[in-house]
Amino acid sequence: MIRTLGLAFTLAAALPAAAHDLRVFASVTGDTVTVESKFSTGRIPNAGEVRVLDASDTLVMTLPLGEDGVTTFALPDGAADGGLMIEVDVSEGHSDYWLLTPDDIAHGQGTN
Amino acid sequence: MKTFLTAAALAATATAASAHYGMIIPSDNMVSQEDGRSIDLTLSFSHPFVLDGMVLEMPESFSVTHGGETTSLLDTLTEAQVMEDAGYSTEYRLERPGTYVFAMTPQPYWEPEEDAFITHFTKTYVSAFGDDEGWDTELGLKTEIVPLAKPFAQWEGNVFQGIVKLDGEAVPYAEVEVEYYNEDGSASVPSDLMITQTVKADGNGVFTYAVPTSGWWGFAALNTAEEPMQYEGVDKAHELGAVIWVHFEPWSTGGME
Image (cartoon, rainbow over all chains, first blue to last red; front, side, top):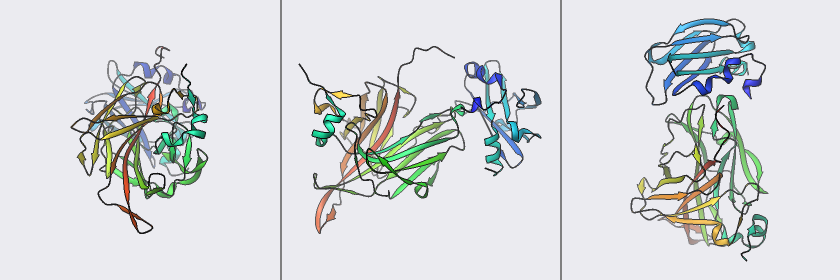
């Protein structure tokens, strides 16, 4: 279980039940993180908030949802070691998360 | 009193009553992000209820289709023993959410008992990271079952429906054989007539089957190729099978997390 890899993302256990039809996926290419959000219908949310937390559950940054449901940001220092929790809220009751693991980051950087 | 026959007893005595199936069985067919990023796949040619293997030669093709793009995975296959016979396995990393369709075209199998060649165009669908987009993908195989019900995320007891196609056209009243992958050998039957169940499609090539229990179920629509194949200089029939493997989940009463 990726969730048990020692990452202190306590929210991870609570979010799935609260999430309805939003689907969030994050990936790394080089030093850039790309977050993609869409509804299960395929529609793209037109506004929302992306929160990025580190392995100690500290908020690193908050970003607006980008056009086409895509948000990009530079990989924060230290993220490659501990991973990142990325939460997206588009409206009340529509939220989801993606846990970007150290393995995901290494894969995106071509180092594993 | 009716005697129920176990898989072991059937394998020893009644292999002929069970059907041949191309098989692609993934280690998981609904992969959440908590499950990891990779799955294992096992390829074989087997009698899935009686757990009797046959030799699967290196397939002609083995591919994955995702988001409209098809990639050959033939080079990734490694030899494996499946039901005590030769098969193949591989590991595949799921890069993005969505539905991944794994498909195998084996080399034609010469079956002396049936005096015919058999080619089973075999596929299975895997959903990654909570996204089911592409669940109804049609690959355009020589013969294919196109799912009308999602080929994952099904409860035991659900009906499964699909359209049988040959050369892209629906096959009216096609015969579809249905068999359970008796993985742990615990299922038994009162008669070997129950090992492989048979239904017919309707006039539009649509078949329906209600699945009685959870696990992997194989659906094989069988047609005969127009062109025979030659064995030792003699024309022989060539059975074309459209095979799809679908996993059905046990009804759960554990409550929400």
